[in-house]
Image 1 (tube, rainbow, N blue to C red):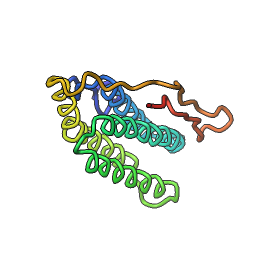
Image 2 (cartoon, rainbow, N blue to C red; image 1 turned 90 degrees about the horizontal axis):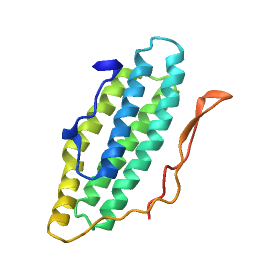
Image 3 (cartoon, one colour; image 1 turned 30 degrees about the vertical axis):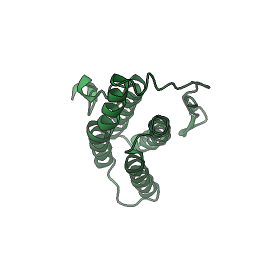
Image 4 (tube, rainbow, N blue to C red; image 1 turned 135 degrees about the vertical axis):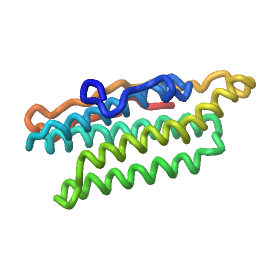
Length: 175
C-alpha cells in the first residue's frame, strides 16, 4: 500500500470503455479516501468518514446509472443481472451507513475492505463481461460507437459551514 492507499488502479482493471474506466478510477480514488479517513486515528475521522461515504454513495449511483444507460443503448443481454448486482450493492451500502449513523456495531475499516473487494470483483467479472460484449460488437461492426452526450458537468463540494455535509450534483446527464 503506497501513500496510504488500499488499492491502486492497474491497467488490468480496464474494461476497454474509456468512460467506464475513468469512472472506475474515481471509485478506486474514493475507496482510498475512505481508507485514509479510517486510518487517521482521530475522532474527526468519523466526520470525515461520513462526509466521504456520502460522496461515494452519490458517485456510485451516478456510475451505475452510466453503466446501465450504456447497456440499455446496446441491448446488452446481461443488463438484468448486472443491474441486480448494482441494486444489491447499493442496498448493502445504505444499510451499513444507516448502522453507522445509528451507532450500531460498525467497523469503518471493514466496510472499506468490503467496498474495495466488491468494486474490484465487480470490475473484474461483471464489468469485464460487459466491456468484452461491447468491444466484440464494435469488432464485428454491430455498433460503431456507443455515443453518450454530456449535458451538464458538476462537482462535489464540502459545505463550509458544516463539514459533515457534502454538496454533490450529477457530473453529467447521459442521453
